[in-house]
Image 1 (cartoon, rainbow, N blue to C red):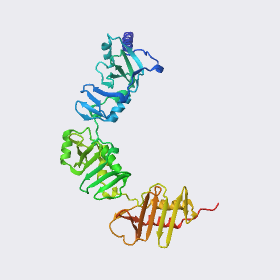
Image 2: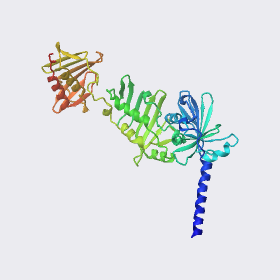
Image 3: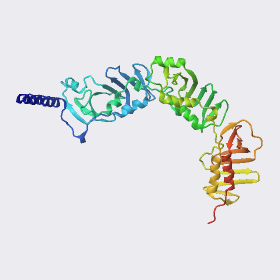
Length: 443
């Protein structure tokens, strides 16, 4: 029994000795206090002109900034780069601060000692060259024993640091991560026209001073928010980097056409052909991206819904366009009722009398609420109500005629041949508001 106890004690001593040896050789003492965190590297993102990212075991990816400030991948092939991803990488280095210094090596033994930190064959290498051709190479090695930090070194600097583990995820980017995955890499604000070729009917939109205008099948007042959303879906649609080229080509070739889009921006016209696969996935061929592509599921549904909208969904259903601006004047006539309201500053007047502001605001709200439930082609022949709204300091005059029907009303603007079908509730809301007008209370 005593002999067994001696053996157990010896084993325990050997284990403790091994742990002590590992600790002495792998955990160097701090050389800086937490309040004196040294800066490993400080990058000014706008001044960087090239970035080379090398993942362990992978071919380096070289990014070069163009004269317009956009990033381009130049090796291992020529691709558009995701500017947002590149900028985020550079921002993580502006500056990169160390948690502590764990090794301060002399120049003659630096290479020999880097291996114990995973830095002789690092997980990630990032080389950055600025506009003055000054280059810095950052090495990211193993995780520290606690797992919340990584070992970091700067080529030419004898020190080894620890830095927050998040820096590795910020810099460990593959070719797929760095590529611009937009099918139409166009800034939405630069889009000047859109053409949709589809079975549901061709549509064309042109950007005008105050928003958008439907040009085809003919000119219509346009719901700018709907067209803006279409542009956002088109310029935000991305290809799926997880799909193989063979899978994308097979899906596209067998897919049912959804729409062909021509998007014209400041740099020219790009085309996008969208098809729906038998499995419900969507595929695309873009003039801006090489080959056929599977559309990423995160953007495919919204894109297909936007492309499937009918003409009427893009038309402006509001009868009046003054929106939330305060009108200058309102003229109303229906049967024997005639009302003229004029605004001066914050006050409303009618026939020389100051009007109760709340009662006038009820009329303004009722006018804003007049919107088409749908557009019709017939049923307007004998209007009995005329409303004219002047806004924009007299620059905009909107004249509307309204004919009541059994289930509501049909309205027509003086500047538009479209017929707006209105529901009974909104029309009654206007007549009730007119009836409720009253002078301001005397003080």
